Amino acid sequence: MIAPGIKRGTAELAVLSVLEVGPLHGYEMARRIEEQTRGSLRFTLASLYPLLYRMEKRGWVRGAWETSSSGRRRRCYRLTPQGKKKLTPIRAEWSELFLALKRLAKVTHA
Amino acid sequence: MRDWRTLVEQRLAGLALERQEKDEVIAELAGHLEEACDGLLRQGMSEEEAVQRAVSQAGNWRDLRHKILSAKRREQVMEKRIRQLWIPGFLTLILSMLFLTVVLKLGLRPRIVSSGPNGIFLYMPWLLSLPFLGALGAYISSRADGSRRTALLASVFPPIALTFAFLFMFPFSATVELITGRPVDFSRVATVLLKDGIGWIVLPAAALLLGGLLAQLLSSAHSSSRDAAIS
Image (cartoon, rainbow over all chains, first blue to last red; front, side, top):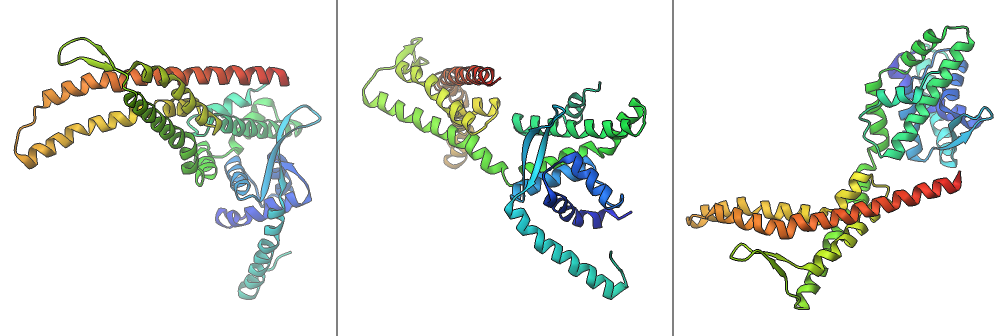
């Protein structure tokens, strides 16, 4: 498991990355992140929603209520053009960090 | 079936957001928990176990409430307060003062209630105008998404400001006494404040509040008829 301090830094990248594929509501977002990171990144309500609200305020994502085929109302989040623009430098920063760690401590990433 | 909405509402009691914003947060989190519980049920858990697990996965509710509040309000709190309270409040104050000046300039005489030195002066045309100004303050505040309480506060802003000005009389009198060395008759100051307080604070506040309440009533009737039309 990844320590909470490291997770906090990766949360924005994780959310932006899953939203890049398509709009998702909170639960589905958390489920996909957990699935794609094989359980390494797990979001609770307290870690996911405040982050989404902050990102929405910054204009990176936009939430809107939608009704699913089962009749349930869900707030779906979409990546905004501003969010898409933000994803590139965040990815570059993390990539650079992994390379630096690799050189420093022989840490490898997939 | 579990009432997730009530559960989240109870856990997030005290989340100081505007009603609509709070309702949306509650609905969103309740939806998340419902989905989580359904997912666990599909994995074969008993309902009780699934509910417990879903709630525990939510993490610390107090922490969640604090984080949501800080994420939602940090940058907006002052801006909102200005639009919802200070602008409509000061507008009501300025307009009521302007109208009073006009009444005085026109030479309209006040109605004096009770005789003697403690008579209360009532400027009836001015008092009659206040419900409209109170309604205007409440309307502007509501338009800026102000809560019911904030809208009513904006409508009675002039007497609140005046109350503070009146209360300032005591420290002011005490300072005058200290500087000049001449004793100030505080019982006289209190009598004047009480007498003027009725004509300048209590009655205007009631008139403004009446307007504010009527505006609220009209706006809620309007919104409920609009909702009915939509559904």
